[in-house]
Image (cartoon, rainbow, N blue to C red):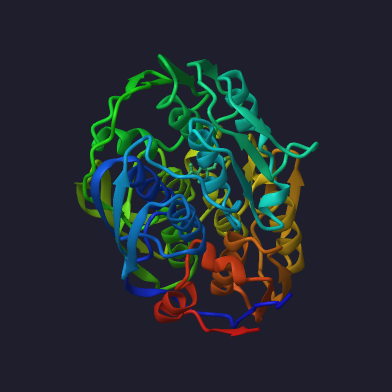
Length: 436
Ligand code: S3P
């Protein structure tokens, strides 16, 4: 396999105005719900990354007519909740856990059988978290003996509604079961142990499907229908986070990230950085298609270590790789607990980040559910991202407080969520080359 390497020189500061690509979670849902709606959905700001393109290809292979993407514009000709057709081969979902877990719920309600596969990383990820509750709804769904993909789903099963207290805080599990709930006879309710991203609920509502929310319980009743609408996808706060940390740690930085989604179920990264001393200002707060959006200005400020409050973990779950870099450049100790989920992301993000931080000279102590990091001097060195897009980008940002080059191995998957990362990072002030 080709090893795409990032070679990043010590960089000085980040400056300018940037619009990072569209939100990955919202882009997936826009294709899925647009396909299931009645009428034509026009999407703008769609993330043209490998993960969301995998979702798009899956729906095309189920006979949904989709035009684009063309500069973030996609037109989805919805087929209604019962209009998908059997694909003639397994759905290949690449690196994308969101595609597979959300589609598991949706496929459980179809009249046809389907198999879903993924790349090496996705093929290692736990799927019982969705297959077990789906089975209690009456789905016939199978994993490998170790609970991993491929997933095989047998069609034509009548789904029953369930009331399901989720054992883990997961928006993918919640969304999977809500999508299955659209096909169940009666009301399906999911009870969350802690708030997680609510893009599915918001988008269902904006397509005219009632969703009941009471405290930590969210419910849908099967048998309704979705009506097409236009969806403007905001820039992804998870991609913006790399530049927020970069600007915070590099003296003289001043950067503005435009049109970023600031849904309160996603803003843990802002809370954590502010608690560490970051200088962050939100401008032009507004609402676009049911999702709050703002321009986020970040200026350099000295950071200090903190104990990260556990309630913020699900609200910043994808941002920890780069938050660990913030901690490495902060004064004192940062302690993360309650984040065992990081071990089952695209890589084991606790171990892989701890290994990389130690390689570049930082004291990082991994624990079963988090990490203890002592801020210090980042030298250079060669680290391995293990094919995890967010690890590759996090170590690129580390160059803003490094004294020597950082070489990062296995970076091709940056294209899953942030296809123009190198271009934007370079424009903002990072000096890097890509070797294949
Ligand atoms: C996502 C939910 C999160 C997140 C992932 C996207 C979603 O996963 O890590 O990148 O779009 O619902 P979990 O639900 O497994 O925490």
